[in-house]
Length: 214
View 1: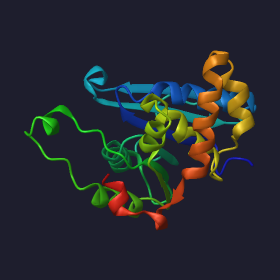
View 2: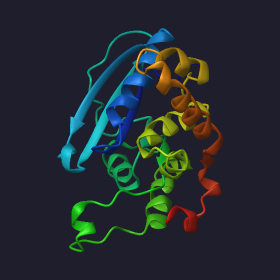
View 3: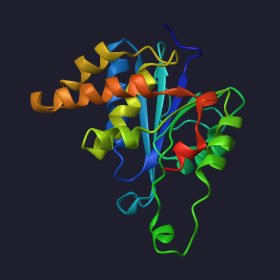
């Protein structure tokens, strides 16, 4: 499978602590191993306090591109958190953008303290799906919790991404690349997270709002 366009622009977005940067490094290296030229740029909010984190990946077979994607030119948004996905779509989206989103929100401190209210997740999902040419959803956090390790939700998301006909990456690509990042003891857990992500991703038409609110 090739790229729909060159460069193909991907933004992985989430909040501090979700493993956003590791996910972008893994995906970037998988694509490098496939022969692509990858440029990665990171932007941070107050990441240590759960602020926004964005990783820009520019994927090409021809030449390196500047690390940050121009506004309105993103081709794929991978949202580790729903509100962050919506923010990125508003700035970098366009009618042809695709979306993969984790449906479980992370509440900021002002919401936890009662000073602010988090929007209804079902409404967020409905909005971001309307802003995308095609959207896929997965509760990656629930899957990671079922495995006993919420930190691996980012790997579950990479598994979901590898199951889509969007980028030329699969389980074998992850296995080869992950050996450079994880110890042998960590490999089986991460491979299982990847497999569960591949099995758990759903098209937007299968979104269950009641499930998404959990």
